[in-house]
Length: 624
Image (tube, rainbow, N blue to C red; front, side):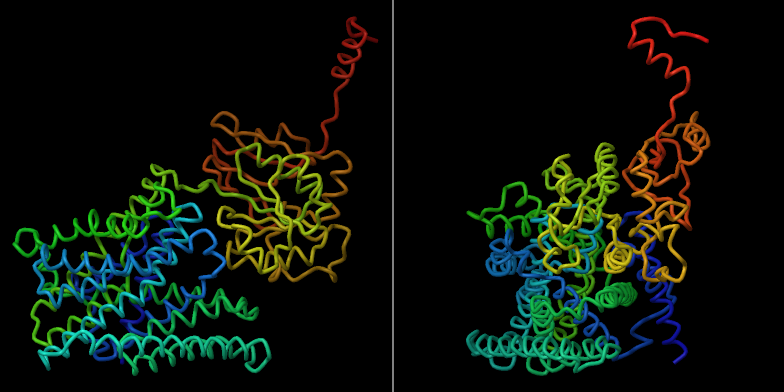
């Protein structure tokens, strides 16, 4: 018990620590997690998951993978397929068949695996893995269509790859018992099991979609009921057929996502946190479970190691490109996007977990090459993540599928103050978007050529009609403080609590009417100006001013040049990152930053007034 508790704590520290380092450095998180687990396991021998958890390790990993696939399914909305549906359908059908055939052929001819092992491994290689694809897309700004195709392919093909491996395993198991058996004795029962599992997953989603909005489940039990249902569906369908549970939970997640159950929005932050914890934990456990013997096969100085190296190169430069280019022949996907998709195919948790599972089963059938799958699957994960994780930005830029990398500003509420702010930020090269449900309120934004969205920001349809990916900062600036707080609270989990701002409580309001800080966004300006405050000052002629800092002209110099009553709003870094002055935080100004301030109109000096009069009269300034 003591050892298990220690291992769980270490897995948490290493997994979340690796995720934090990835966030700070921009490196692929999966690479750091694999490295952390590998160092803690076979290198330094700090802990051995197999020794600590024994027979429980396999079901723990399997349930974790099921929950990850369910969470990924919840992020798939059919409306995303308006521009990428044909490509996704092709990759989920034609692509699976081609990828399976080419992967199996390469595994047999290049890696020298026995045909049964090669065919099974080729099926597993169909997966690309949402646990690595989605973080890569999050770290690198890729245009909407190729990003959507990669995300859908990763989530849909994960259970498909598992089922391909199951079909191969069941066939070779039956042939080992009865050599005269045919493929038709395996496939029809498998198809029935797959259909039945899919129906069970859909039925579970339908039951939840019916019960949650009707109050049949209390709010505090919704998350436990949902997680328990996912695990129950997964285990039940696995009793019907091995790994059919992965398909069932994926269907369950996708079905729930498209039934638009409003109460599921409240558990969104929790399911995201669960996914991060599970991804971190599973990668650490699996990489720490490796042994020196598993890795000895990968030594390029040996014949086996060289064969594996050539196989990995074939996987990167032949199998994946051929699969994509053949599958998308005569499709509407542009060639630059096809080439980008042909390169990006990192593998993740499902590949390692399923390979480890079937390696043991193949050994039981007498196929010695089954042992090779563990080390080879890790090699595929490491090589593809390194190759694609560190080149996705370069590939996206060269193939012109790079989205806007400069952080954008989403402004909720079309008011004279917010329009002036949007104009100032747009002039500085920051992408802006003004959102307002009133067409009349947006008239001034339209006149000035500012990007706008006519609609209710809290409406669920907005998520699908407006791509929010480019906007890393939100400012709620409508005339209703409570509504501003509601908007900030709603988007805090998606954009980040430290990146949602609103105008503060007006100075003429009493404290008893103030909203609790826990439900508000960060209050703009150190003074916490409210809606009526900025409206009043703008009517008095206050404007936004920008000042660029340098080594010679620092923040104190900039303040000295401004009127004493000026208020600092934000600092714009050279990278485009925005740091706002709030009632609790003052950002650290640096050379190269641009300071945006909200200032009163500059009063003209006597000399300037006299010069203006002289210019009008054509004479010289008069002196008293």
